[in-house]
Length: 186
Image 1 (tube, rainbow, N blue to C red):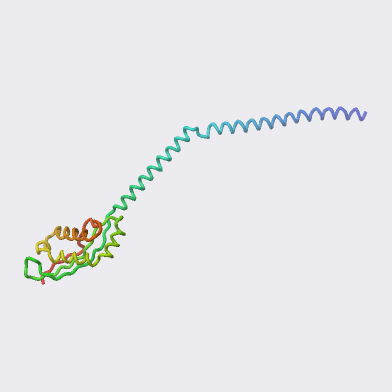
Image 2: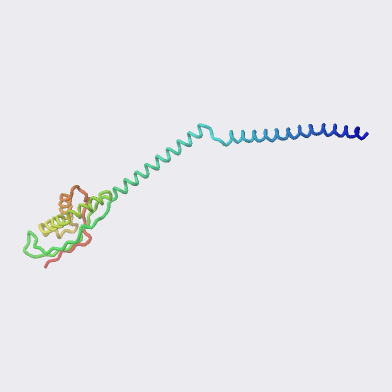
């Protein structure tokens, strides 16, 4: 009898084991199915289409080209920016062409150049400093008294600019001007 009681228990456990295994397999399959559905939904909802990817790439390309153009324009503007350089201080005592009196002139001269020509101009000034100073002094000494007494000094500026650019390899100077200017009769 003991064997009979054990047999039905074994039959019940054998019948419940396949039911539990079938339920466990069903749960695993359902879990895997839900995961696959979630991944598929995420793929279709979150991953951009080929058109969206190409539109984003085109927008980035356009933006980088525009930034490159802005940087190139800024660099060109920086290179063409006008810079002031010192051409020296001059003091002369002389007698102008149209008078017998002696005058003393003291001036501090500056020049305007483009920033991109700065290195070349520095080299030129170092090489031709004496000739440039001599030419400027000669322009001052050969000027008429009326030129030296002008309010604007435009003629003297143009003469110094022309002479200076003539001595330099290229026309680096855009203009010249005076920091200080004094003309006194002795």
